Amino acid sequence: MDDLQFRRAIYADPNNQDAEVTLAQQKDASKKQFAQEMNQLDEKIKQALQVPVPDHLCDKLILRQTLANHQVQKRKTRVYLALAASVAIVAALLVNFMQFSSAYNNLGDYALAHVYHEQDKFTNNDSNTVTLASLNQKMTAFDGNFSESLGKLLFADYCRFGGLKSLHLVYQGKTSPVTIFVVPKNEQLAFTTAFNDQQLFGSSIEFTNSNIIVVADKNESLAQWQQHINKTVSWSI
Amino acid sequence: MMTKQVRYEALVRALHGDLYRYAYWLTHDKQVAEDLVQETFLRAWRALDSLKDEKAAKSWLITILRRENARRFERKRFEMSDYEEATIIDTSSVTTEQEIENQWLRNKITQLPPEYSEPLILQVLGGFSGEDIATILDLNKNTVMTRLFRARNQLKEALEAEPVKRGMYNG
Image 1 (cartoon, chains in turn brown, purple):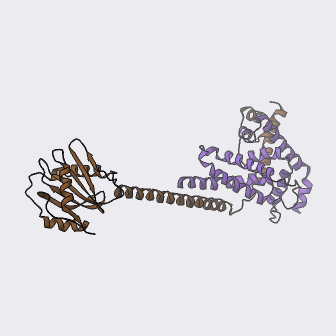
Image 2: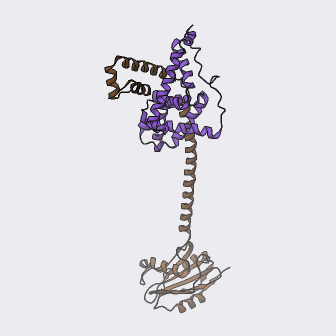
């Protein structure tokens, strides 16, 4: 390694640890001295470059970041809150909708479903009977009155019919109980005059403030029941 | 979120000094250097997740800082006045001989053309190797080595040329 090369290498990097450069230093004392001088100069340069750093700079940097971060988090919290509120509102609306709207949109379907739901509770040969007087007492809630009994009344009580308070009557029929609902008029459930499925059929009679629905098996004569009801029921205003 | 904050604080504590000094030598202005460092760390925070290798943090930050510095010139063209005025840190009030020598050398380093002083600062202050400097400055290694050679050569010549003047400071 010639002198010029060596000097260039040391000038470029005084801490040069290349094998060639180290070897050249070992061989030649003047080269070693030169390298040491350059190292000293470098040390001086290093000292000169160490300008004082402002004391507060580190804290300032962290503080600035913490503040910026805090702002972002606050914004995020607000977004999460809004999201949570939206979810809550949707959930509330959904519950509301499920609870207060019926799954059926006409009287017939609902009546059939209702009858099937409570089918097991009643048999045609139940010994319980309800008197006309107690039936009429219940009918006062609908401003109605039966002048005479339609048959053997096995059960009479209020129930929920599409979210409405209604009267559920079960009469002894020819082969299975006949169900009669007295339902206040409701816009949600469309009026259906007649309806049926494989087992049951039914019909509705429309009165001023209420509908009376008869559901029976197909051995019954619905027309007869309707006629009977029309004859015996009367409504006070 | 917390771990990112911890990482960031560690980064700031470990490297803000080096970064500030580098910025100072790049701009020769305390205030501008401080602003640059702040801007750099703000950008570093945003991109902190992209920093996978903690060892590379220093050169990563320096790269960001250089880009910020370049942006500063895009935004606003500073008049390239000479540095003599108040731009150099005044430490001559601290009258130790060492400080006076440092001050003298600082002036000399400031007078170096930026393309010479920048690799020198990266090498001496940042402890980067020739390859690292070449990567940071986007130059090839030979160019970097030549510039380092010229930088030191100029400083050494200046040092040898002005022993008398330096003596005046001592008196």
